[in-house]
Length: 486
Image 1 (tube, one colour):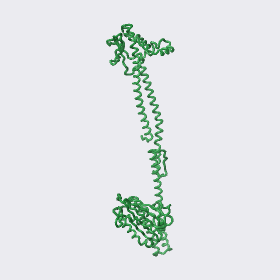
Image 2: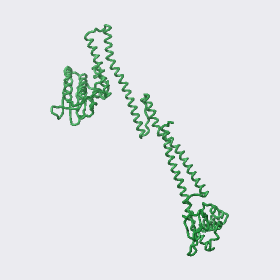
Image 3: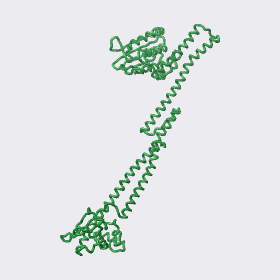
Image 4: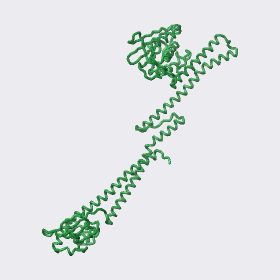
């Protein structure tokens, strides 16, 4: 049989309470028996001096113990007279006002007839030679306490008192059984009360778990909008918060994936539609198949090829399948090589380039641990953005600084710039601003996303901000000592 956590918790709480109540019952039961015996012993011992005085007085009058031998009536009367003589007079007066019989007790009173009474403890009357005069020889114990009975200076006998080791009188056993039943009934009532409290408590404590199970099933079925109500700050509350964070992340990822697919479809549809339109116009004879037409078709093919290559490169980077062969790279040489590669384009656009290095090394050499090909690809994407989106006659300033901990690259170009609303999204995939830096310029919207992945693979960071030149400023920071080699 499979039990859920609510019933397991209920059984655990109830079992713990049951063990506590069982221990309390056992302790109370044995403690009561021991205490009850101690109580009887104290009552018996309190009457001993009066009994001894009575026996001394009896012997002084009769001079012998013969009258008491096996005469139970005289023994009971002797005990009654001794106890009554030691009883508080106020008690005698009260008893005389409420009982028709004279004296504090009648001969047939329970006080004398019950073995539970202090008037009948385990008593034996012994002769001077400690032989038994009155009492059951089978009940005599060698461990009995002997109280001497004297006449003048002579010891004429002993009163032997044997303390009880267990309850034997019917009244004792009945009373003990009643107390035991009371303890048992109380324990059962407490167990029922514990069950009434434990079940709602188990339900209350397992409710967050049930909610978490239901929420997890909702996530499994694709309901990423499922959220848990957090009503506590304990571990279950923290687990609920983590669940909500997970659900929010999954929801955001699904939205991003859907947007990503929609953007890719749109990006691929545009060059394909242009190609299709131009080819159909050639087929229909609307447009002649000449050099201009072939150049236009070739341009769209290159655009489509570049987009597919960027998507492939970005997917490899996301999967961790993009290989990085890191070694010591001279960043100065990589930068100069990148600028030389785009010299014709920058010259055509009349973009003035200023390259500056700040380092303590001779020859302005700045080395770092990295993949030269990927770093060149990073700088190439930045240069393409500058050439694509910077107005003719603009500027490009590149400042490379090195200190003991890191290398920073500040890449700044001139107008046009990017609005503050668009700035946080520049590294999002397929994101383009709606004004100057748009699709007309030929970009795929993936260049900066690829740059970000390359920088992160080198344990660095890249940020975008407004440039003092009026355009965009990219700040790249690389640690000098990187340890992850892919």
